[in-house]
Image (tube, rainbow, N blue to C red):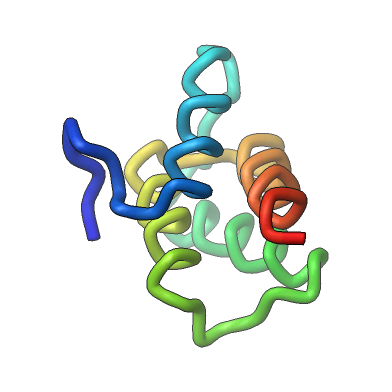
Length: 85
């Protein structure tokens, strides 16, 4: 599910994105595979494993579009995990 002007359809993911968008200097991954590795390892650090739910996939889709680096992936997944508990 892609991000549109209406959001992702998942309020928790939209809240994470809104928080991420407050800062512009997150840095980026060098490659798509590096970004994927950061996404999966950040999720695994919080005991979230594939296959991801639709909501978790929306978060990863956003991170992939951002070419998110390790710092951003860690932050986004921590914030997401805190909002679920």
